[in-house]
Length: 196
Image (cartoon, rainbow, N blue to C red):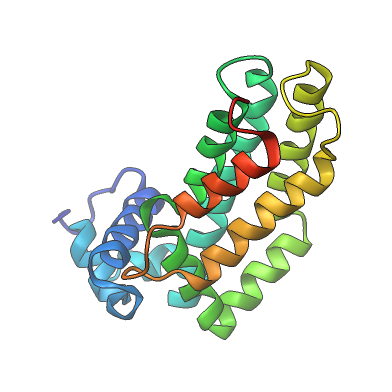
C-alpha cells in the first residue's frame, strides 16, 4: 500500500492494469472501485481522486486501450514489406483482445454512463475503431502496391471486415468464452491469403 500523502507513480496505468487483471481472473462482475484499488495496492480513495466516478474510470480504461491499439495500427506503416502481412495484422488485432479487452469493452457498454462517455469521446475524435480501420486500410493498400496481398483485395473493405469482426468479438466474448483470436486469424488468412 502506498502511504497516505505519498505520490503514486503512473496512477492511471496502475489502476487500469489492476482492473484488467480482475476482469481477466474474476470476470467483469468482480470489478468495483474497491477491488481495483485493492488489486493495485493503493489507498481506497485513489481511484476517485483521479476519476469523477467508477463509470468515468471504466470509460477511460476502454478509451485508453483503444488508443493503444490505434497506435499499434498506425505503426503498421513502418511494417510495410516486412514480416508477413498476416502476422502484422495479427499483432494489431491481438492488442484489442489482450488483457481482458472483450470483458472491459463489454463492461463499458453495459454501464450506460460509461458507454455514453466512450461514444462522446469517439465522436469527438478520440482514437478508436475508425482510426484502427483507417490505419489497417492504408497498410493493406501499401502491401497491395508491393504485391504482398492479392491485387483484387479492396483494402478499405478488408479493413472494415477485420475491424468490424474484432468489434463484434469484443462485444460478444466474455472471460469463459473461447479465445476469439483464432477466428480473427482465419479471417485474415481468408482476406490476404495464407502466404501473405
